[in-house]
Image: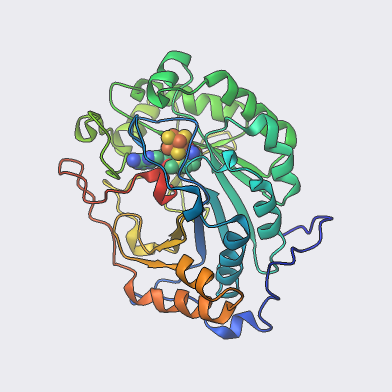
Length: 350
Ligand code: SAM
Ligand code: SF4
């Protein structure tokens, strides 16, 4: 990453001398873990209907890993071969002083990609700081271009603020900006072409995500709202020529290029095109729980290690290495059944 003018924080232990000889993260199925997603908070200024209930109970602040502890966890992972870290949440950019964490991770010697997923509400304020901290690519969630529909889906979100945030990011000059849209039948499925046009007019990529059954969410009926990636693609093909590409950004999306533009259209399809076989990632929650799979409960408590043995990087790394033996083969999502996974996406770190 580009070093910034800041010096490395004192609280980070000296990086291991020969990180690549200390073993990388390979699970029982031979999958190589190189990608970590960190949820820095479970709180959010929006309440998207597919992600959160209207009334949520959040993790008490004392149970959150501090920004310093999160940086230590990130360092441990990079010394074990992780080269890509995504900061997410909840809404990551509402966590106080979060830019400091970006700067610290951005300076880790083995990190190749530091990226963020955000709802865009804070980007007018923080776009430039993120860029300066070494963030090259940014994902912004945007489910509708209609202020009323946007409000209905996010329950409280202000579309104008998010659009202004997108402009700030465009002005700041990131390498790549991607829009993420969760498409729900009868809520926003009629906007897929408009969303692609919006992205392509601004030189951004866009990914469509199938809703996943994480957490119980009041009266929102997930099976009824399901709108498959194949349906979206068929809708888009009424207007655009989509050319399949083998390109990957290291995540689960399958990409198409829109003929005669630079824009890629991705589909993240946990239901219609399961992507577990090539899974290369794990997640850490804001409480320091290492989740080995988005759709299963297998986890390891890293906060216990970070707080019980402060500064013992080797113990932390060994705990992470050992966790590979419980990474499950894959998720078993079923939109029609009661959610098996009670954590909301905002806790998991989408
Ligand atoms: N608050 C930030 C945002 O919305 O971009 C980051 C966290 S959010 C949990 C990350 C992504 O997960 C968003 O693109 C959101 O649309 C998606 N998401 C949330 N709940 C989901 C669900 N149940 N199924 C599929 N995607 C979901
Ligand atoms: Fe907040 Fe993101 Fe979840 Fe929406 S999807 S409620 S913006 S965490």
